[in-house]
Length: 103
DNA sequence: ACAATGACCCAGT
DNA sequence: AACTGGGCCATTG
Image (cartoon, rainbow, N blue to C red; front, side):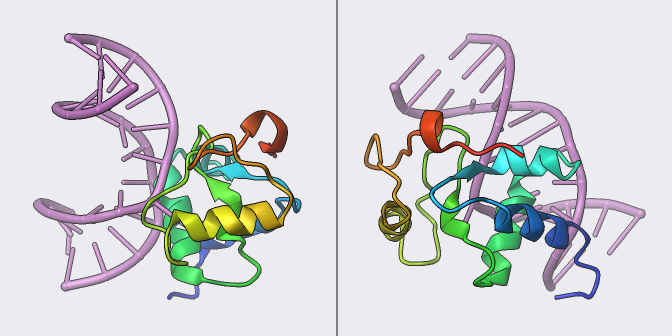
């Protein structure tokens, strides 16, 4: 990792600002920091693995979870989100109407 | 500097 | 609804 965490730092800040019991989308975060690149958001959280970065609170735009999550799969993330008080609409989807957080 | 990659998003078919 | 192709932009070799 470099010292210049330019995007990294911004992404990390935004993700850390997500309230407990809420989820945010890659696209929202990406645009929030001034970029259009949602992929970098995922990269940042994935590479860092910092406890301050609740990756499980970050989902795709539709609330859809990713199959390639680090913790052991989307199932792990699902459990963590449920622990935050989030109810899943589908096997891999969160209720963005209720839990979708915007900056 | 270039090519390939990526936990995504959007539009068209 | 599923697949395809393009975009976006930082990271890595």
